[in-house]
Image (cartoon, rainbow, N blue to C red; front, side):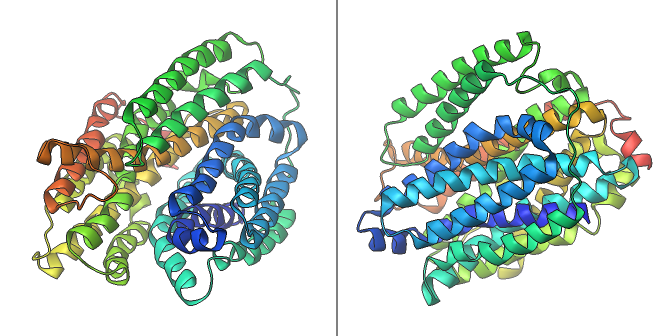
Length: 460
């Protein structure tokens, strides 16, 4: 039951993140501000995640995994109600920060609960279960959000979390064990401040870069500053006797490859959910409804691959699957850029379906191999670090998509795109091609994996 309980919480959190984008115009009218100002709430949520994810492992080890997981569910659900009841931008932003605190504790702690309590024989199935929300939510979220916003109110985007939250809380109290770390680690205040500052600068910088009316130099300065602070944070964490984030897990090859090189894969793959709706609506002139219907092909591929992921990995092994799948993913991402309004419908659906298949397999094997060689004592810190990497790559993937479009207008017309720019199909072709190259770069790391990587999990 544990993977299903955690998956339900993950789905609620991921769905909330993707649904809100479609409601921004209506929320702006309610608050009496412009749509760009409402995006402050999305930024506040993301920054709250960046600050509190690193301490989630320490809090769960100290207080108990069930206590923290249940408290995170309550916080997230109550904050959702407050967000849906907001009548002003200031209050909405404050409640989004509270919601981010709940999400920051919910996701890494939930993943830790699963990997701690799942034997190696069931690890692949368990990881597959808890990764499907991250795969499906970005695809169904915009369609669901658009439907509720159009036919009801944007407030229901947040009220939808209430039944999910109550049901998952009841299940968590009944099935989740309350495990603690007997080591009683001291709180690493320096590591918390440095890692939080680094993540805020990097994520806020990438968020700014995704807005077309932002000076890229300002965004680049924030990202560079965040990287420099991050270097100091890594030194601090390595030298501390009781670090907030234990980086020793990165000494394990399978884990370090999936975190570091896997981040390049995820950044490239995460640009596609951002670029595809724009291509279909701006490039092809389709309505939001029709583009949503086409994107169901990607969702079908994501879900359909779940039936074959375990047999494929057991048959061919993690290393072979990693290399072949990342190459195929890059090919189909690039193929998305070569679609045109005159492309036969069957070909278009086939390309989107194949992208969904490779995306699903990629995310599942990454999440499974990451914990193949992690010991029980390291699972909490490894899960927290994995969540930090996943959150960063999600935001950076969206920013990369926006930057690729801006850069493509410079190549096309000699100037960077503005909010009023009408992107051409050629601009999207450049953007998808750059995303495909980013994905393909990660094959360098996967080639370094030993041929027997993850065989302990695969064999069982």
